[in-house]
Length: 220
View 1 (cartoon, rainbow, N blue to C red):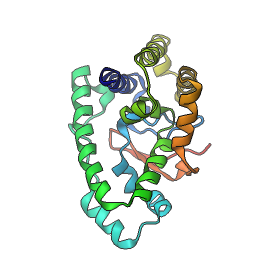
View 2 (spheres, rainbow, N blue to C red):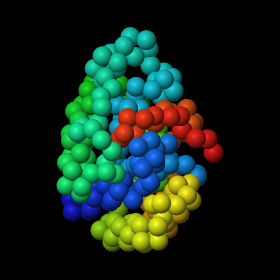
View 3 (cartoon, rainbow, N blue to C red):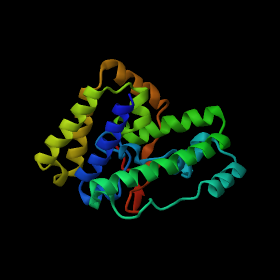
């Protein structure tokens, strides 16, 4: 499984490299016809800082202040757009981001109760959209196999060779979503749906991409 998770992380990096510059720097939430969510690029902390998520979780004013103080918004490590980095630079960028996310996750566990933590995870799955399949934690929960990762990678390669990264972003996302769902088994699809929980309006989210830009998520 460790080898599979490493492959999933590499796949997320490959997706960054294959996206058009505008998409790699400011991705909207995933979903039907929307962004891929960048896999593991979206952290629980980035979601928890947002008003729409705080409202859904029913956070009290004093807790919101603690979150602002203990989880301040930080610029991506190393700066720049991952799409413009070399493979080694991109891998280092992802490792640094993963380390910061793990540190933030420990703080979040001490701030929220069990019910709030569970709901935050559900919202993240919905916000990631098809990108959830390229998230290391979710890949483990869904029992993604080495063979499935290889199929994801093959689909990515075909898309790059076919010029998918330079074409219509919406069409590219739709193709990736369809391909990802084809690769999942029926049980995995059912588990992914269960992980989403009650519907959350992801169009209310402000998405900040690696390049520092942000914008509201597009609606369906």
